Length: 269
Image (cartoon, rainbow, N blue to C red; front, side, top):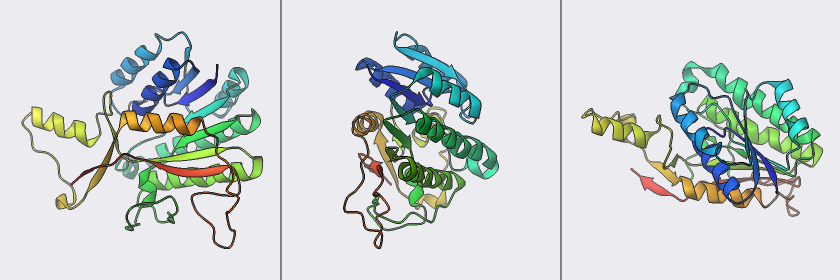
């Protein structure tokens, strides 16, 4: 059996991924800090389902706990890692920027170090469609330059991709970054638009509309996301032999590194 670390296991995507991996026969160690960014009861209810599996082990820990994360890697000896733990949300980063540094940057370097020192065969991690930032060229592509983030959250996700590439280059660590587009489905986050809209409708309250309604949003169903994550996890990143240093492709590298977009798009305007 393959032993996999899933960080953010009590979160929306992490819960569904851990469940899928357990159902196919993998052993899963789930890490989560169970913070109160949204109702913790929802996280405990997700976790309760995972704990019914004999091959699931839970560890409550801050990803920024350098020594704790190092010990976890040394003790558990994972084969693969999926890092989904992060401080989420764009607007929240305007008022709580340090939460993003602690989780998304400090936490991610702890994961990279754990992978580096313990022979992890593949690190898959959550990036975000928000890295496209001020780019208006459509459709989005992993081959586009993404150097103009418009939120701190997006900047940390872009930084994760750069950090991962560095470790792929220096230590031959296979890494794949997944740019998720807004994910929805059962057990979803209550701070997301679909749940906020539904709650307002049920309570007979007006729906908050931003930017005077002049925007579009892409949604991706959770089952499509999980299918994509599992397929990526089972196929280690490899170096691109055709990569040119004088015409560098942002989405690949000579190192075992790649970025990919996960989306089955349902436009909502």
